[in-house]
Length: 230
Image (cartoon, rainbow, N blue to C red; front, side, top):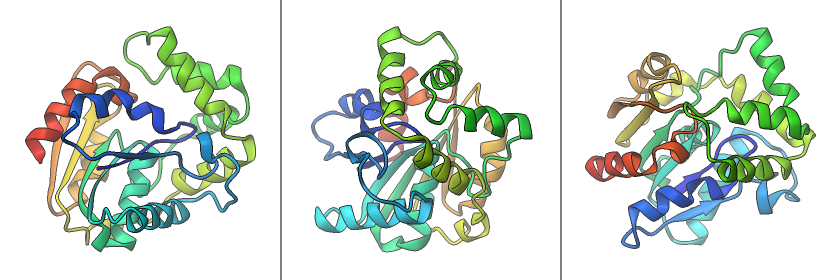
């Protein structure tokens, strides 16, 4: 299983879910270029480059085809991989995915997200809102530390790629089985309509009582859904 984190995050967001899945799962979790330990990697910082990096990593580890697990923007990158290199993808698990048609943000919402790039205070305010219940302070601190590894320029270039993505029609050709998990408090009907409904072999699940960062709020429940799906 290849784990792909979201915007201004790093591979550590998957630690709890990987632990829940257990040692029988061969897991690869990477820091996308421009973030985490890959913060010095050159651009471009866009979905196409991220997907190419995922393909190259799987080839280097002789791990294709893989079950690709993505959160938020990472789920959009996983969809891009499934479109560009279908032979590399055995199945998809998409948690709180940003649609391949873009984020659909209002002008105010877009400005709010852009303002988090390179601003630790604004980023902390935004990340604290991505949970339904108040997050554990240590969990929030870790997320904020990950965000600080992503420079403002990298974050904004990446944002323009995923927030204005436009390859939804191409996802209708993705035949790999897909599990689409929508948190209850993260516009699940939007995810159903703009992600799951376009994938020919998708199973859609609403995960109750959690927000956008479901991978940190409900790792045990996600692991159970993944086991049942597989």
